[in-house]
Length: 233
Image: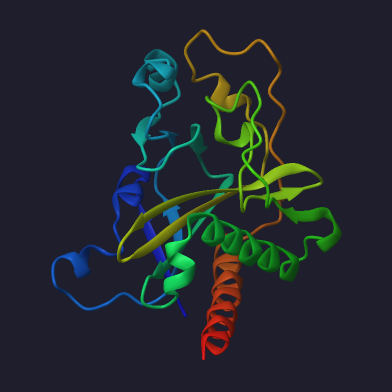
């Protein structure tokens, strides 16, 4: 499986559609892992969050851009201490998996967990959330304040945040993990009113390398899709 290095602005990376060639009559897309390497930093709003959530003056002072993604959930702050890797799976490669939103998210979480263990994170400290959405007061504001199916927890705190963009051609499952877990910088960018409850930091793994993670994820995905194909025979 190919690992593709995508280096661009946060806005340009979010705008990429791996399945656009199919809609235009081009060739099919192979399963791919995207290592997304932003050249800037930005606060990224979920599809249903209002523009008024962010404080324009605070964003300008920080030298950031505001980007909106197509998937739902809370805001994320993309910056150099965030590792961003996406799994691109065409429907033709795993039709049953791609057709099931919940199953595909848990599958992605399992791939992330396996990759993190291969990279030295103790397996006993990691778990993949398989239940429903777990929300806190900050969840409508900040993605890492809560967690949903497939997301990976370290000692009970969210380490890997996932979001999913899907079409009939396939799914792009976006993944983000923090090397430094403080969420205070994103709170400073939000406009009042915000919850009065304190916001816990996200889990972190400082030693994580983006290239190594992408390559290990690619091997994990390759094995999983091969196993799925044999089970369908």
